[in-house]
Length: 393
Image (tube, rainbow, N blue to C red):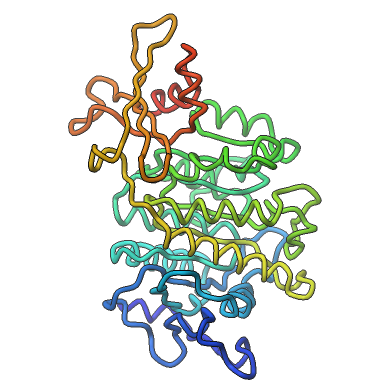
């Protein structure tokens, strides 16, 4: 089966300006599936894919129409100071059942990652995050998942046996899926009044990282190490305040500012480790003058900008590009080791594998902040070190 079998071509007559695109516009730079499906054997860094599926988008029917509304704005943005190699594969057909759509998304994500092409998924409900995650099962690859959302989408009742899920319960499917390839889950921007205490206790018990909106809003840089640790990102548009992104039936007054959402997307693109990102729950029916479509297109632009500004500074390769800092704790003989990149000034922390935990490596490198190093210098154990060690155990 060819990947083209899953897609329908883009109808430029409905989204392109009457006079066409300027040569600097992304619309003239991207290889679009209009008549001929892009040749994925040719070099490409990023693939845009729309998904026209909203049957399990709770209280937000209509978000399946998102892809072309976003394309209309995105293609009018100018290329940055780099040469893009981007393909737009069109829209994944809505399957006869939701499970059919999941299979298509899963297959496409896996095949693109195999080809070192980063999929940008646009449209549909956030339950498609589960299908995005299943692509990594095909690759048999451990996953660090970051979700930007005002809610913690866990199921309150007993989970069903079906592979099908919803936009408010897909995390339960991911957490319980067998075989389990999830190493870490992080949430950015949850709002406490939308999160049950039971859900928060589950996160604490599993040593997952959840960050309240109040802890990151106005200081979005604190989220950078969390984003840098992700293999895949899922962004729910309802995480953005309604005054900046109204086009979502579940939008609420509080949330991230538009520029903070763009910064998160640039951090995601800048992450050498990240291999897929999805933008979900945008509903054109609620968009006023195309404002949310424009914000989302700018978020994607910043993600692309991050990708083309990657430093490729994987820790300790080569060692000459890194500085090693060692600290000792007050009440323990244990030594904490930190690594700083000379290229980007970014920090990592070494967390040792428990005895027998890894045959090939002695320690796990986790992205951290300079503040974690200062905590260790003061003789205290950083919370991030302890949570990571517990997960490794």
